Image 1 (tube, rainbow, N blue to C red):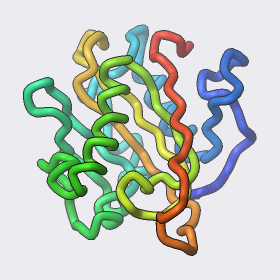
Image 2: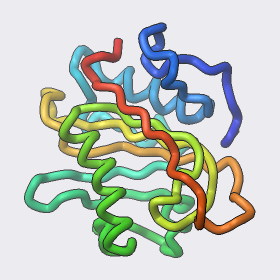
Image 3: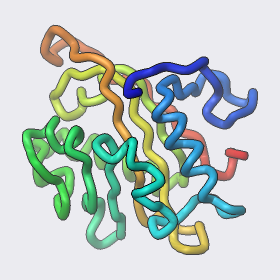
Length: 186
């Protein structure tokens, strides 16, 4: 059930970084699915993902392709994600195609860190504040690699909205972003 919370557990499944906790049950489920696809690699590839396995999440997930030349391009965004931006679909778009330039730079900066540092990113709080929206919830970015799992070639993300803040984004602070290198995960 969306927004359902579980007992707080460290993202890595162990006790190494207890400050990084995925609280939402569906985000935890997606994280566990992503980990199951790694099969000895640092990260799974986009080809490993089977939409039938994650049908419960499709309205809230997004897939981005990444190349240094093209940058980040949405190849899929669920209806809940696209709807936040007043769109029916984000396929083929870059963040700068629908966000103000300063906001697109911030969002792409988060994506870039996932790629360059080969890490998982989790945040909780005002998850769309960088896009001038005020829903609160949790978000997870999971890197996707080439077939060998070495180079990051995309991102699988999911956003779960828990509530909408009663005020606009003015005066609100950004959520704390947590990054964990994929090679530090079991």
